[in-house]
Image (cartoon, rainbow, N blue to C red; front, side, top):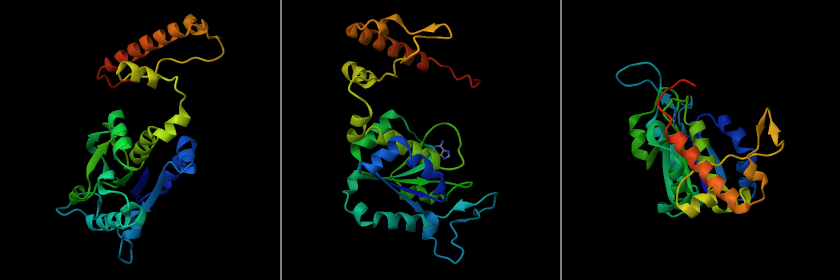
Length: 239
Ligand code: ADE
């Protein structure tokens, strides 16, 4: 999988890409992440990427012509151009996009070999930027300062689903196999490790029993309970 990320703040992306699974997947050649500074596509002396809004109002608006030039430069890179168009996607990160969920991550992991992620910023972007993209994604009902963190969320969630990456990350005996067998999409069952008792909380007896069939049954039940509990959470916004 190749990711191309268009941003005005490349520094926001570096750290998370240089740690853990994302780092390893890149080192192993399973994924490539190419970061493009939109400012490099600006043509004027001041490297202008935004402008004041028509009709007035506060804030600056990302320019569609510069974004278009930046996108064209990405798509003209030989390694991108060599990928079949139906295996590529241009995605804009915005709170107004389709909700990014596990199923969307799975779809991207299975269907595409290259995605271009466009990070919006400042107070907004020219509406016509929407005409340049295939899809818009939101990572949730909250407003961030820009699309950089959402782009990283997409990269992370998709990368761990790539066949070559997951095989190394998780051995067969994981909640995934429970999910696969029953066809349900379940949250993780609870896990425990030493010590056997912490603050009076003991590890469930069944996990110490060595009885594999019982353990599997217990984990499935717990995963179902957890999934139901989360689904029943209300809209109360206090924590
Ligand atoms: N940009 C700002 N907030 C966002 C969100 N919640 N999802 C995607 N892109 C965003």
